[in-house]
Structure formats: structure tokens, C-alpha cells
Image 1: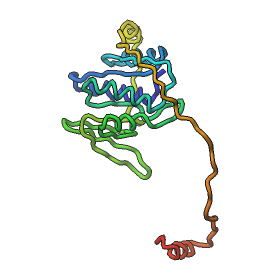
Image 2 (image 1 turned 120 degrees about the vertical axis):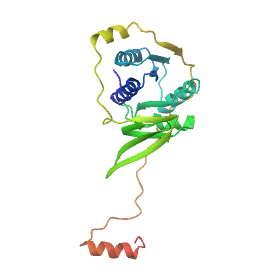
Image 3 (image 1 turned 180 degrees about the horizontal axis):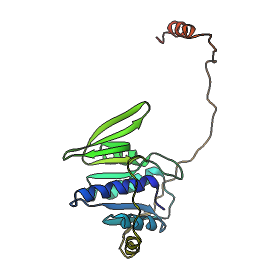
Image 4 (image 1 turned 90 degrees about the vertical axis):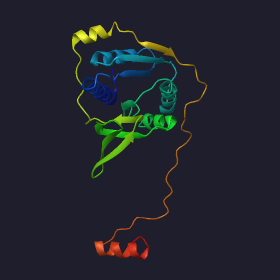
Length: 212
């Protein structure tokens, strides 16, 4: 199954392609043979081609970003769209790491995206409202749930996707160790909480401490 955040990214890319057929949608997935089902589902949705970067090793967000960056440097992509986070570990790191490795601008948690000839405007939901950022091409954008509603591929397209070839590359075995948690430690509290009687007392206390 496809990560629902990634499925939204695929839907967005296909909508762009439908509006401008000159664009091409390429899917990339890293992992064992089980990722092929997701790639074929994306092809059934309407993607043009799919690339399977095969590895049986356990991967971290940094490993995935490194593999993607190495591949993306070899091909001219205008935008890399991906889900904002994993749904198994809930890590929200790969998109940001990829942008850093490529030295590309990035926009995360996109709820709306508007493109013009020179840049992309991405609106994000933030505490208290919305924030809009602008990125030049090429860029990395991670998608949030409110961006769109993915389509359901027709059965005919699902059957046809089974016959489409996947571009397959076997990744080299890495000897790098995965990050490991070495220990936990309690936070050292240097101040004790206080209960104040009213708002005026709070203001007085903050003024005395130089916070206001």
C-alpha cells in the first residue's frame, strides 16, 4: 500500500500533468520487492514511469534521502514531491534531508500549491493561520492531507499497470550503522513551578525577572 501522504503527492503531480501534458511524472521507491505494488498503483493512477531502487537493508530517513539525492542528480527534475512523513515510524525528515543534500529550496506540509513559470507558491497550515512560501525551481515539496483527494484508478488501469515495466536498480550494500538510542535521561528542573493568585501578580513577577 502507498503511504497516503505520498498518494496525495502522486495525485498532485498527475493533476499538473493533465493541465500541462508536456510534463512527465516519475515515481521512485526504495526497498524490497514489496514496494513494487505501490509503484504499480501509482502507474495505474496515471504516472508515466516508475523506478524501483532495490535494497533489502533497513533504511533510515537519511539513507533514503542519500539514495534519492544520488539518483536525482543524474536526471533533470523540476519538482520532487513526496509525503510529509512516514506512517509506520511517523518520522518527518526525509524531504528536508533531501533538499539539504541537493542544496535545493524546500517547502513542507503543503496544503495548497500554485505554480508559475519561475517559482512555486506553497501554503502551509501553521498554528494560528496559514503561511505561504515561494520556492524557485528545482525544489522539494512535502505534501499534507488537505492538498487534494487522490483518485481511485479504474480496474482496467490497474490491470494494465501490472504489465508496465519498472526501471530497476540494485543499490549497493552500505556498511553504515543505523542510529541507535544509547540512553534516556530525565530533564533537570532548575526552577519550581509557582501558583499565582491573579494576572497582575504574573505581570509583576515577569517584570521583576526582566522578562518584560
